[in-house]
Image 1: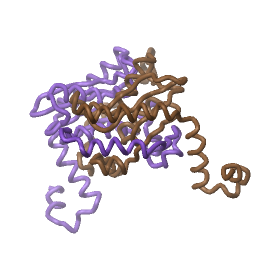
Image 2: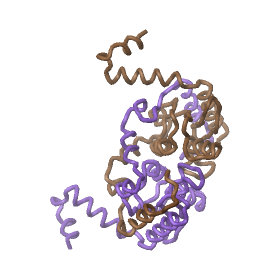
Image 3: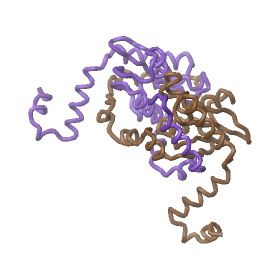
Image 4: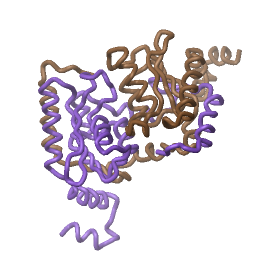
Length: 184
Length: 184
């Protein structure tokens, strides 16, 4: 009823109200079973000592396409966050590099690396359970990465220095004139 | 000489001057040979039709530990950017999940996903050749991802909705009380 009232009165649509409406709409598209499955996977990952307290899965048309748990320490791969593992698995399963029409369920708000991966993979929706603040309280604080992204490259904690740009431009020229390239 | 003058006069150290000093310092740590190797790899990647116009490598103590070229379309992996491939390879080679004391050479300014991966892998320096603007001009525009990171999750192009937080908190409690965990 509250929802209807807001919809029918455009003048009441403040940013906060629109946000609430959006959340209510998207929550209806979420499968609690899939999120509970991801939560169980994350719990299992912790209890088995396999890695960090995170898991994710990719679902499409009501079925799970691929699952992933954090594998950073187990596989010596700092990029093996749950979302990355699930995205890679789902792309392999679906035989493509895009997750069109898929939903990503993750037990925690994605870090900047995983957010970037999500935009490149392009699932339809992302559902997450714990917040970045919850993760930070457990020792996984990615707030500093967001701060770093805002800084000039050379002023970052890991300094990023531009060199030999002129020589690299030939690569892009070659790409532009490549006849049989596969855009992505 | 110009550099010395700035160093000797603190009052002249504007933000721009400090930035210039930093760049000059870091440029001296860069190996042109390694960057040229990365550029050659990227060129080869384009010309062989293997993937996008990007390559990267990780170097430590004067030698190349691992190389990577963009493999998104070839391996159906949207996360297989050159930097991610090189970081994963270097960690496997070094048998660890941190790139302490390593330098990352990449033919282009890293996208947000790769920047995130760099912060998790923690190399000492990053050297890049082409800029994000150069990549955008060739059809690889990641500016929209930076814009998306600034938005509230539910207002992003790929909507991100929080659900079942209470149930997920148990995972973090389990992590906190896990005696044999490996922090990362």
